[in-house]
Image 1 (cartoon, rainbow over the protein chains, first blue to last red):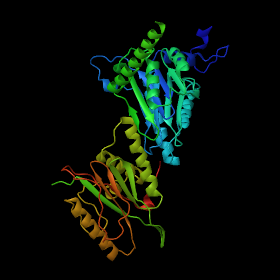
Image 2 (image 1 turned 45 degrees about the vertical axis):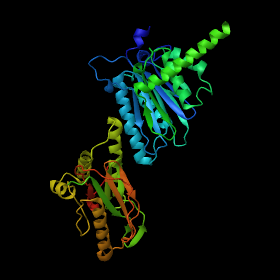
Image 3 (image 1 turned 135 degrees about the vertical axis):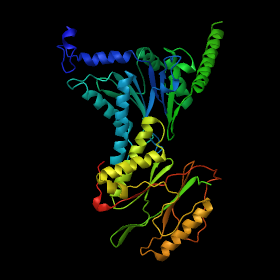
Image 4 (image 1 turned 30 degrees about the horizontal axis):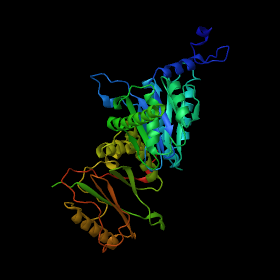
Length: 256
Length: 193
């Protein structure tokens, strides 16, 4: 049944599926895991870094991209696309041009919601044109608006977008999302450090431990975006491990 | 010894015919952390063009992770200006000339900037001369200095007698910096952004 309706994007199947879009979502599930967390005063994006080949230059393998920067110190937008890297490059380029174009015409930087809507509209267009396939990417877009409120949005290949408090995309996204549902509390995100640790803990559920395997970026309110180096990630990981040990010791004491 | 800073000043008058509309009009546009574009000419055209260049310079920075060099930015501006004005080679040469100049002036005096304090003194002398000889009243000037660290701002340079307050520290030896000045002839100029 599916095979007759999955060739062309512009054809619905009898039971209402657009198979090409669903296959695009499958492509996303093959990508690395990424997690985004909206704290009280900080937004965090973390992604699994696949091990880089020996001869490959590590610096050229960046998954987290800035869409617009801190020109007015009140706004910044970071994004990460999971899925087909080449598709991501195209969409990021369009989004960056749109950020500048918006500033040129209305003199205000884009809100996170605006640029998310732009990216989602772009993706939707490609689900409704003849001869083109959908973008095989999902995005997590984080940032602060002019009013200082942190935002996290997620888009998927079908062109829908939603705001989230915390979300994960890519491989094992379900596991990570379940972890977040259990552990995302007001306390957990109250301080910047706690929010960062929550993001790392969520990723450590599915990623090998180590600063080399996690790429992390944060934006704090009214500050420039900050990409963490491997060392800084390591520091947070050691903190997390220490806390784990403490918790385990307590547990074992209790049980004895 | 090559200077390692650029001192730029522009007046703050925005006038239409015989009426002065503004006396706090900033004619400098910040392209990036270390590039300023001084733009004079037809009201509106200047801002449109300068902002278009400014946003494209910012786009380059977002795409590539680093800023355009002053040379590259100057060439980009020149090319855009030439395209806007029409592809006449004469015009291209005449109106959109890019001069790597140790000084550039639209006044009648020479700026020989070896040391920054001398430069400021010379600037002051130029502005004094303007006050004396130029038919239009130009009471205040925006003055900025670009060195290897950033753009330093003196928003007003009111009277020639006032002592300058400069916040930058000692400036080491370095290379030439391109001074970018665009001149427009309004009746030939159309912006497409």
